[in-house]
Image (cartoon, rainbow, N blue to C red):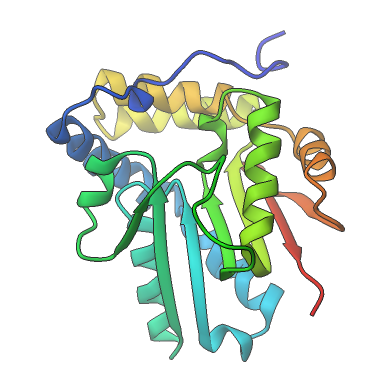
Length: 229
């Protein structure tokens, strides 16, 4: 049945041989879709509730699969308007993407083997990154590594694999005039997405205790967990 199983076809955006110009153009187009889908809002909503406003005054955050750093930059600006200091480290495998975010703190590396010591960051997060991983074993490793390097909280978000979101994405990728390759990737991203039960299983396998998994507006799966003080 359509969408009952996660698609494993690779997205064009994951191709290692894309030029710097192609990568930059892809992120420019993606920014238009992100504005429509309010990609930063789940973190603006959840982090103050998870940590408390006092704890949010000063945070060191790691954004996994950060790409051009758009998420961290937007959240840092939002936090500043609250009077908070959020300092982001951006990790991605694509050097072209990271260079779009110069001179921020960028680290080239894999989410499967994070180049950081245990408990290096107050918060570790990822947005729409996990579906780029190949299979269950990689997702479990990603969850385990993310949990290892946070000292306070883990917040992960990705696409919920369902027909409603697929139809919505199909509409907007055409309405926004995105290129054929970006349109194809957008629709494939939903097919590569997850279900809540799948994420709950991954968290258990990764050894993340009392992880909470839930749906955000029927479109995204959220996972959050806190470490004991």
